[in-house]
Length: 347
Image 1: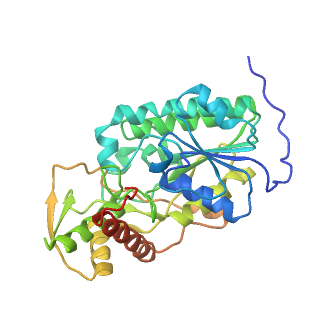
Image 2 (image 1 turned 45 degrees about the horizontal axis):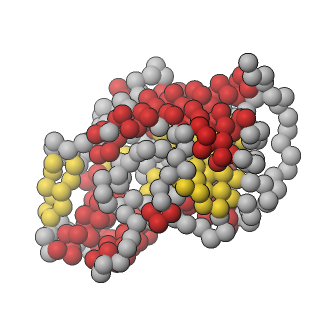
């Protein structure tokens, strides 16, 4: 039986402490590696199961390793020498993916199960887990005019099938590793992260990227129409990637948030119809809307209550959606046109 570590004050963080990021070839993980690199950290290890050529972000100076961290042996290799571990690895995507591939989403529980044990065995000082707003009780999210969800709304539990339940169970692992073994864990519930260098085609993309791509395609082909999943009335909040990586850093290093799930998301609630209108405005176009009522739609509404994060960090994600969308649209347009010319792009 494992014994609980003595809980001690962390020594001062050094720039040559090894930071490990799983899912490091993905959208959030890659941007997080870039964030720490810009802060001056010199030893970063990014781990992802995708071949290096398929990584969304490759940061110069970062050790990049291809490993599938659903395998416990690979988790041990990933955690060797690490001081901090940020676990962002998961098999997931936008609503189309998580509704159609629930078993694949559930299997991601193996990643956190093996990663947190490997981190503990390696003597890692702090461990971050990327959870999701999909853990929240779906009965509270049926109305598009939803009230913002606070952290306690995850219980009584009625998470989204597949992906949401996997995230909720993995949160419990993080809480128990702190309670029983003294591993300092951090848990952030992401609310719809978007921005440049993310998935924008192929079925795993989320709403902002999908809408940007569809508008670009409609203009390029001269079709003048856009297909929208659902009736356009469902509501969400969307967090820009720069806010996300900053929030991860702040949450990870707040002692008052150890093993405490917290929302990390924007509180700017918009409907899908409004999201489309915003992208149309950026593109300078007005399109005919075709509503696909039999497409995956998700819950009626979801928004982040940021009362707790403001209290704990005196900060919250604040990039306006209009600003973040403009940058995202420009990047996706650049990728779309490059692909059209036959250049290799990561989608």
